[in-house]
Every structure is written in C-alpha cells, then in structure tokens.
Image 1 (cartoon, rainbow, N blue to C red):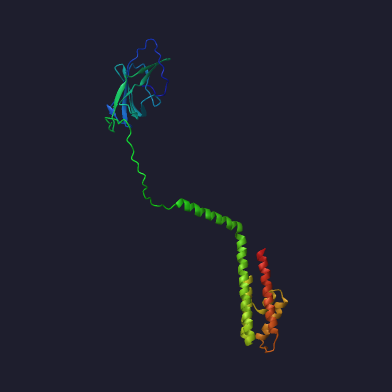
Image 2 (cartoon, rainbow, N blue to C red; image 1 turned 60 degrees about the vertical axis):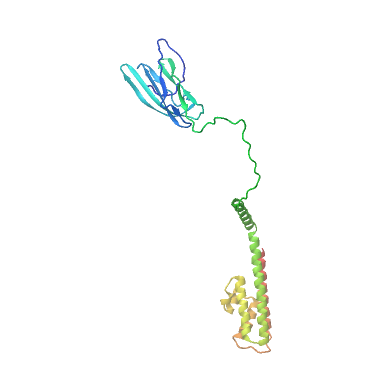
Length: 300
C-alpha cells in the first residue's frame, strides 16, 4: 500500500482502468456516545496499482477520527491486499449512523476515487426515552421562604483592609517618620530637663536647711548624671579637671566646680559661706544652656 500522505480526492477515470470496490465495515453492531468503535477498510487490487487510503485529514462525519492501525500490503497469486482499521467515535444522537470512505487509485497522471459501500451502526442509548412526551413543561412550585444562612468571615475583605492600613502606615512613616522622631526626641529632652530642675532644686533646698555637705554632693552628682544623659557622654566618670577641659575651660563650670570641691574635699565649709549659692546657680544655668543648645539642634 502506498504512503498515507493527504492527496486531493479527484474523480478521473483514465482509459483502461476498471475500478474495483473496496470494503468498509464496523467491527461491532452498536456503539454508545463517545465510545471508540473500530472501522475496517480493506481493498483487493492489482499489484501494479498505487493505492492510497484516507488519513487523519479525511472526512469521517458523523464520526471523529481517533487513530488507526494498518498492515503492510500483502501480495499473493497476483493480487494485493491492503487493510487498515480506524478508531472512531461519535457524539451524534442519530439512531443509525452511516459511513463511507474513499480509496484513491493512482496511475500515472490519472487519479480514480472509489468509495466503499455505506456501512451503518446502531447507536445504543444509555438514558431511557420517554414513551409519551408531555405537551407542556411542569409548573414549578414557588417557595419564597428564606432559609437561614450561616455568616461567613470575609477574609478577603479584612486582608485587603489590613493591607491598605499597612500601606498607609508605611507611607506615613516614610513621609513623616523623621518629623515624628524629632518631636518625640524633643519631648524626651523637655521632660528630662524638667525632672532635673525639680530634683536639683530639692537637693539645694535640703542643703540650705541642713547645711549638710552630703546634700551638696548629691546635687553635684545629679548635675553630672543629667549632662551624661543629655549629651550621651561620660561626664559622671570624669574628674573636675577633665570636666573643665571637656567643656573647653568654660568659666562658669570651672568656678562652680572649684567652689564645690573646696567645700566638699577641702573641708573649708562654714555656716556663713555664700559661694555655695553661686556655685549652684552657675551649674543650673550651664545645664540650661546645654539643654537649649541640644534642643535647638534637634529641631533643625
């Protein structure tokens, strides 16, 4: 049998060509919708003829092509035999379905198309067919009573809301984050400074009432700790000389610490000494100046 390439089906009878009848038949008597059925196509012919059977591009209506199997041409006693089995399926609802396939015979420039006899197969229905079809459709029963429905949590809605809130929050943080950080820093500076002034005044008042050097030393320690926190340094661990050098020999710091060192460590305190009030005022004024300087830098 010749190759199975697609060739246009043209009826052309050349002189001396006697057409022979190919045979086509279904291998079963019935088929169901969508079920694969085998269709056998055979042809006995002269060995000198070039024969072409239909391929997948041929017309198989009302069937659909699924596949095929074929055997090589068998020649015996001067006759050749070609056989191909096609796998088909149908979705048509006709009770009886028919099929006839063409076979092409090639000889030189002539082409002869010979059709098989029509083969038929019965459609086997799986759903019962009603004997009597009602003239009208049944009337639907109306029921407008609402049934209770459980409320479901709207996860997509809440997830979208959370995503929107996160997006807005991120926008506010990147847009106004530095502003709010500065505001918070100024708030902490103001709060710490107010606390220092209140505690510092309390220590001075206790000193003036008791004239105890212990209260004076507590006031100086409070001043050093406040500057350590305000400027993030180590003033509270430095000596008087190192503190004066750190603040570039500030006159107020130098004079105030010299007075307090003389009174505390030099044991030169007397009840009528008026320099203690001056020392306290100088240290408080210096702390005010440092707070003003740093809070102004935080605002800019």
